[in-house]
Length: 216
Ligand code: AMP
Image (cartoon, rainbow, N blue to C red; front, side, top):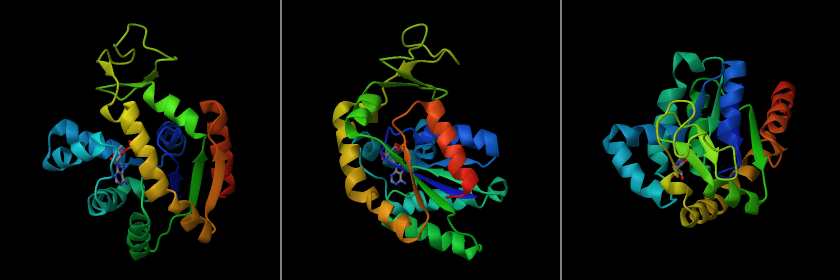
C-alpha cells in the first residue's frame, strides 16, 4: 500500500508513521527527516535547505520530488511505503502521481490528520527533540528524566529551530496556503479519509490501523 499522511505540522504524522511502519514493514519516508539528515551531514543540499527550514518555508519542489523518487525506487518499497510530510504542494502530488504511474503504481490512500490549531501550536512550541536519535519530549511531559538529556541515547535534548513559536506560526501559514489544497486533490481522487488526531497517540494508532485495514 502507498499511503500519504496529510495534515498540519504537529498533528502526529511522524509518530504514527513510525508505529505503522514497524507493524507493516512499509518503510516510513519523511522528507523532513531526509532534509535534517542532509543538514547534519553538512551536505550542499542540507546547507541550502537549512535556512528555508529555519524560517518555516518550503524547500523547492524539485529537491523533495528528487529525494522521494530515488527513495521510493528502493527494493524495500516494493510492497508499499508511508509518506509523511510529502507531498506538501499540488505540484509535488502531481509529480508523485507521474513517478508512480511510470511503475504502474498509484497512491492508495490519503489520511488527513485533523486537529485544532491551538493544540498544534501548544504541541509544537513545547516540543523538545534529541539532537542524535530524534526522540521527542514535551515541556508539559513526557520530559527526559535528566533535564536536557535524552533518556534513550544520552545526547542533548533541545528545541528544534523550526519549533520556535514564530516559526511554528509561519509553518502553519504555509500549510494553509500550500498544503491544504491537497485535501481536495485527494478527495477528488476519492482517496481521502479524515482522522481525528486530537486524541491520545494510542487512540490515533488504533484508528489509523482500522482505516488502513479497510483501505479507506
Ligand atoms: P517536517 O519535519 O515534515 O515538519 O519538515 C520540516 C521542514 O522541512 C518543513 O518545514 C520544510 O521546510 C521542509 N520540508 C519537509 N518536507 C517538505 C516538502 N515535502 N516540501 C518542501 N519542504 C519540505
